[in-house]
Image (cartoon, rainbow, N blue to C red):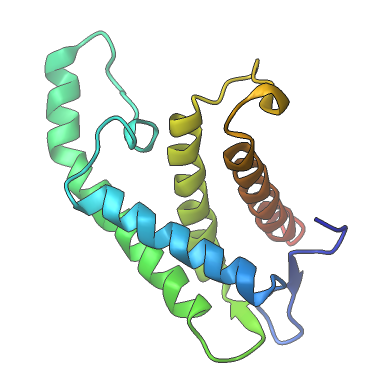
Length: 158
């Protein structure tokens, strides 16, 4: 990737996404795949990082927490996916996010990264160059780069 800014502040407010059509299509397809993982039926192994354990020493409390919160978390993630897909599906060459839509974008993209990181078993000690899954590591790095750009443009306004 070049040194271009992925997001820039729009003159009238909001944030302009500066990704090629093919890159936006990739993000959209990844969000479709995330939706399937969340709903059809949920793959506990692949979505583990999306639903972290909050009571590791108390299985009874953990089960109750997951029972109470999981549906709400899934619903929230699906709503975020819908928001981002709606923005990306626009017919304009210029894709502009409101701040709320950009937050949904960041959350949805991070969810994809978490699932991909689970699949790759990403850790601090990984050497992607030696992995047979080099393209998947490159995708993970690309998504991290886009997410970082979104966080940076939002943080610049605070």
